[in-house]
Length: 179
Image 1 (cartoon, rainbow, N blue to C red):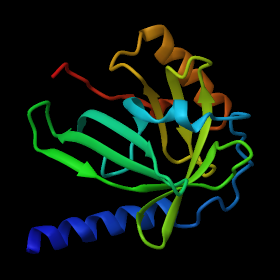
Image 2: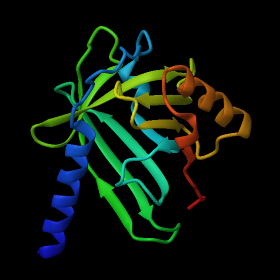
Image 3: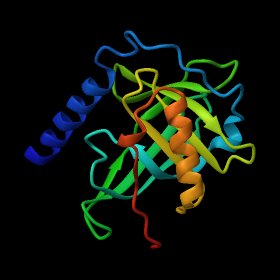
């Protein structure tokens, strides 16, 4: 029981860090014009990020989205902690579409009542690559439908995140290995 409690407290602290002073002083961050939620659902490999403290030292990180009948998004985030064969970590935040005109601005809830800012700021036409940002520009995620990201695409995404106000030197690749 103490381990479960410590994980819950760790998650709560992470959420507070993600939402503390949310969006204060930040320039508005544009999202993509429209996201087809049905096409967006499914697995996304986290290929590069400016990680939260929960994601540091994450191997094989994958985010999986499933649209619920009520319009919320069931999310499963998995990764191996510390190495490819490290312990599997699994989190189940819930997504809430906040802008139903574009479907590109969500609240991501790890723990009630906090909903962290989640914005789809880049999306390839074929839904093969996306960038999720936060208006505060503290964390960012580059995700793809496959676990590979070419050096050219990494540099292109790095330039993109810099163009929207992130420090590109903080972007790091996420290691993936075929299972």
